[in-house]
Image (tube, rainbow, N blue to C red):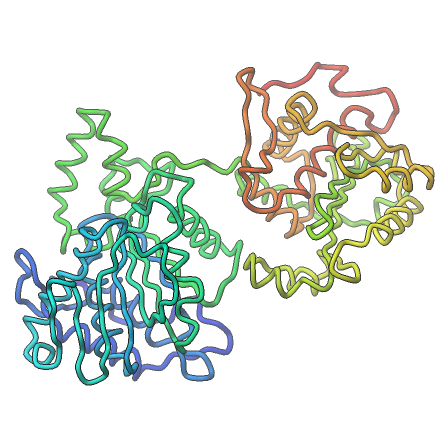
Length: 534
């Protein structure tokens, strides 16, 4: 029995000004369901969409912008093998070529090599042959792997792998099968960046199982999908779907198999999954392959360092007014002038029941806010409105403005020291010293960064830190990847952390000074109990 979609609810990623057009969605569903399956026990049977597939089709083809064009132009569908991926991709390719009303539409199948790209194409070709209505209107040229739809003069063809060197595609649709096998990003960039500009609603349909290369284009898109799913990023043009097991799920549990395989019991036999699991239990070398192919886990993936549920548990209220007059320590991370500048104050506890209180400030140049929102798909504009992010005039961060701001903070709070990254901040340091601040250089190597980074984790786990749930700082904490040296020292890795972590680095520096000096110059937790090694 096929599970049908009983009640359709539009995706939560539908933009505020978009609307659901039932007619457009019904048309797309009806077109696909008029096609027939082409392989195995399903051969020749009508293509009935399973509930999860229908949800995707209605979301992509039924959610429209105020101008009547589709909201989503990129769909990223990550699903384990045997869940009906290729069939769905072939049906979408035919819909874009023959059923989308686009004149002279160009639709392409791409993959890491021609044979892989042919898989979806061959399914589409077989679907055409089994459809009397389409076979009358579609001309198939097998030698060049091309379908030509006569009424609109539209083509669907397989692209060879050497196309990455070419430009100038006027695409209406691109089907990327098994994106994780792409050896580099060239083909992806050629096909998705600017190639559909002349079309009103191009669709890039990316469909894949999980991979194992975390330095790949697929992992980059996978991370973006995760960020959108968790609310860390917003991109109204991007539609993310990931079916898979979480990193800490028990891979031998049938409940986990069910969660990861949306077509379990329909196209994926549970006995097959069970047999593969038993084999992996007997042979540990098969475990990674089972987890990757059957549970859709990125088996070698780098794990983010900060457990965000633990960080969120420290969102105790912080009242800046109540902190006036108290001793605190600053951490300053200037990064580059076009980037985010972070200044974080850490207030040491006044008694045993008190916590380390974190008060962060962030600045970005006013002129490139919109550009950044578009480029990074991060909610900078919202944070500015909410007062969590400040802007300085012009297109670079105005250091004089920040110096003045820190000077004003110095009248409210007893800022004993300001720690800064010794690279790059020479002039500002001199100016702050001229204002009477004690400014201390802070190395970014393992020796200086490891103790306070470990301490930050310890204080978070013990709920001995209060940060008021500041959203910019939260985002940066979530972006941290950690580098470890052979001696077990750790530090935030700016290269590996693809997103901004300046606020986290500034927090770690300020925390170090707050722990070392406390409320009383000379007293230090490190002195009392030595440096902590986790």
